[in-house]
Image 1 (tube, rainbow, N blue to C red):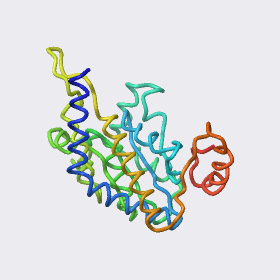
Image 2: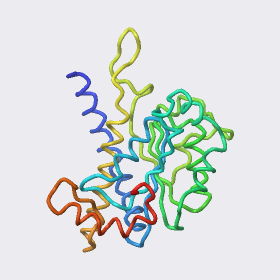
Image 3: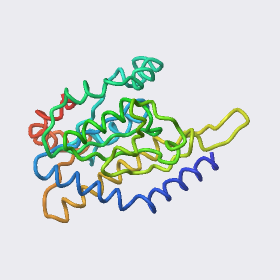
Image 4: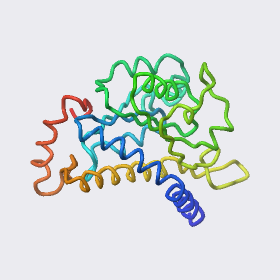
Length: 241
């Protein structure tokens, strides 16, 4: 456990030192959109979808987040089948076309490996439709893997802004004779997600604009506070209801 904790701290420190300017750049893109009535769409498959959930419907978090969660691309309705689905070309366009999108809405697309067809094609389609794309991936790991895309592209090649999570090849950080264990991608991506949210909220504060943030429903006045902002965003953030 001590070794695992040390590895997590080490990677988060690297992300802070080497990716903070990109996180700030991405936060500015998202802030400019939200203040002008846009929302942020967050898409991923497999375990990476947890970043979308991390940013959505959290106390102290932003309301203007649309988590693009499709059960057949997540593990809980069939882990093995979800792995097969995320490798299939053509699915990304179906998912993308079904979204309520404004022209200034940015997208976050997350994939640790950055090689599967669905997240890579999704990022490409979003950019082709003139949306800013923020890609979150392990660049070094991805470069060592052959893409499962028709055009041989990796996710890191498809973002306007690329945030490297610096997760090592294979995700596990503890070596054993049976292979690497102790996956860290979800933990590091949660750190990146909350860092983005904090930077965006700070931009609202710096510009004397009230940020659209949730209050914990378990605190006094939380339900009343949230009800007002639900009404503003429920037509665009489908997962609210």
